[in-house]
Length: 174
Image (cartoon, rainbow, N blue to C red; front, top):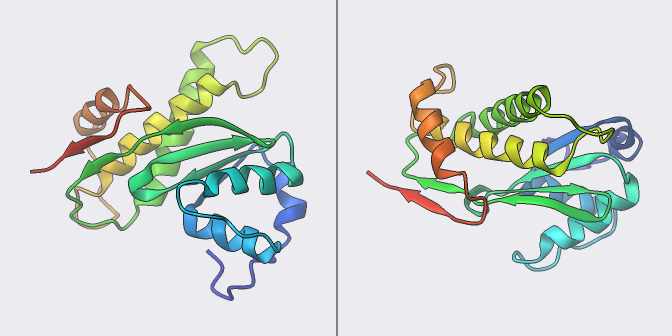
């Protein structure tokens, strides 16, 4: 997040050097607005993000978390994958984004260790597995008060099973 609200910290030069950039939707809107673009309506703003970030780098993967809309992965000017959310009665949202990122990184690396990539650095299957893990770890994390206690493995596994279908939204309300 940019507390100055300028959003001009050299991102255009940095993004092409990265395999992954992970941000939330507020950050994505602010970045493209800084670039002179409008995000469009909420349902279609991801198309604007794909155009904007794709013009900066055709190879970097941009992952945008969208809260109740799940997450979306962009590469070039294309949508590489979408992951629907797991809707829960959150106790404390502190650390949800960091938990998503930790889960995402675990998911992509676990996938890569178990599969041949045939020369493609990060295939869409790896990214989709990362988003599934990210949404699962993030969902489990908001059920705990405070950001210093990690979710238990059994809770993450439960959410992973629910997130297996990236097109289906699950509501888990107690």
